[in-house]
Length: 118
Length: 108
Image (cartoon, rainbow over all chains, first blue to last red; front, side):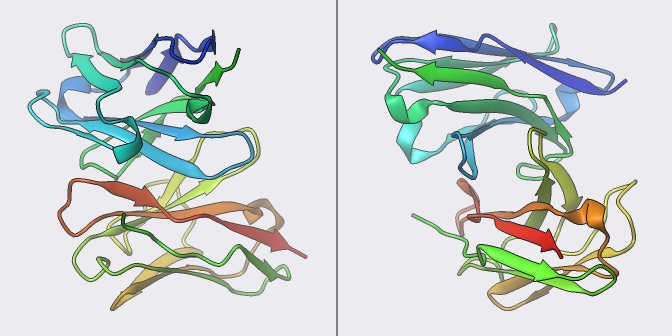
C-alpha cells in the first residue's frame, strides 16, 4: 500500500524547536520530489518546503526561510522537517506530500498537528 | 509575493455544472494543479498539469487554461463533490509554490 505517515508533532513553546518525520512506503521514495504543506486551523493550505529526489535542491516559503530545514534519507525512505525558532503562526497541521514533479502532489500523509503556544 | 485568486464559494444544484476559477499572473507559464479537500481529510489531487486527470478521479472533473486564468469544471455535480477546492501553481521563477485561498463548493 502506498502511504506516507507523519510523526513528531506536538505542543511547543514559542522560540522552541521540533523535528517532524515522514515515513514512506509502497513506492520508490528516491524517485519522487517530497514536500511539506501546512494548514492552520480553519485556514487554507500553505506550501512550506520542497526537496528534490537526491536532495540537491531545496526551496522554502519566505516565512520559514532561515528557521526550517527540509531533508531526506533515501536509504530510510524518510523525509524530515527541522523547525527552529517556532512562532504562534506556525501552528498548523503539517502534511508531507510526494510527486514526480514539485507541486504535483499525488500522495499525501494524514498530517501531524503542531501547536506553538505558551 | 505571488498570489492565486479563487472565489470563496460556489453553489450548484445536483446534476448541474460547477466552475471554479483561479487567476494568477504566472499561469500562462506554469502548470496549475487542483486539490479537493473534505473536512478532516488530507487533500486529493484531482487535476494536474492544467487539464490532466489522475487515475481514479471521475471523468466529471476537468480542467482548462486560458491566459492568466485556469478553471476546474465539475460536470453533473454529485453530493459527494461538496468540499473545498484549491488551485496550486508556481511563481514565474519556478522556485516558490502557492495555493489559492480555496473555494468552498456547496451542493444545494
